Image (cartoon, rainbow over all chains, first blue to last red; front, side, top):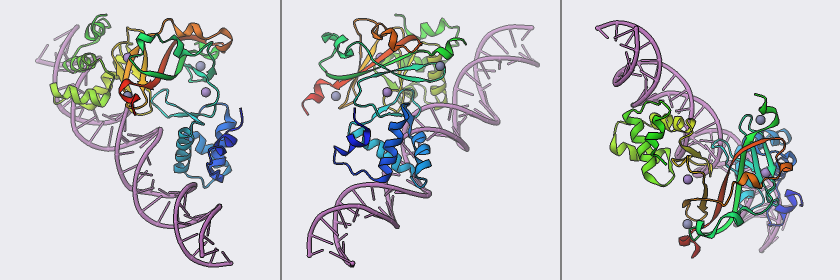
Length: 138
Length: 138
DNA sequence: ATCCTAGCTTAGACTCTGTCTAAACAAAGA
DNA sequence: TCTTTGTTTAGACAGAGTCTAAGCTAGGAT
Ligand SMILES: [Mn+2]
Ligand SMILES: [Mn+2]
Ligand SMILES: [Zn+2]
Ligand SMILES: [Zn+2]
């Protein structure tokens, strides 16, 4: 796993100061930020950074396949720099806490041929939901 | 599997003409409509039906656990009347076609204990993605 | 060095999806 | 009937994200 800026450079993609700050903000976090949270944090390092550039840059990184876009709840999308780690997500129904998780095998294997409707099935993502330790008391 | 209106009545929930039209539109479809598509189709039967009632009613049916809300792509949410059928979804990257699918077992079983981070994991949903037969030619 | 061009960034207007508000309306119970 | 509660409605509003038009780089050609 190389860092996100290195992976982006491999695509012959110009690493401008704005793009670098956005990529480093996203990577440094280990959580799954919204575009607005990334804007807020990146602006701490580069105050003149615009909202449009954050959205443009995130969309381009997604198109390059180096960032995952998670639309989990119909509210803000979340951005995940771990596109090179196959993983899934576990979310707390109480507080929204989100954890990366790994399953024992590829879920596509568990979809029988007669359930594929003639599709070529390329990938899958699982969202597990439950209660985190802090929310189980309530 | 009883029909949606019957299931809703079991909750002592008042079945008004508006709610009936919305429930029947949702159930009749076999696809996964957006709120706007439901409004459009339900208005064909009851022209004075309002947007607010469609949104209110869908949210109440979701809260009663009789309809599933799917936030799959960060655009409009989709509503699924098959809440009493445990199932997952297979989506075409080309055209957006969505099919119900069934896996061989409960995915929660496939999440090892040391990947649960102390959560009580209650349910899961899988989104499979690929290309449908029509989109494989391109 | 200067010019040119293509690509990048910006502010703000705009769109789309969904929620909220306040008033009108309908139904059930006393 | 009167009252009370729940339902529906139109339109205002809010949040998330896109688009536009203008200005601004940065590199390549001369
Ligand atoms: Mn993740
Ligand atoms: Mn379904
Ligand atoms: Zn929690
Ligand atoms: Zn297709």
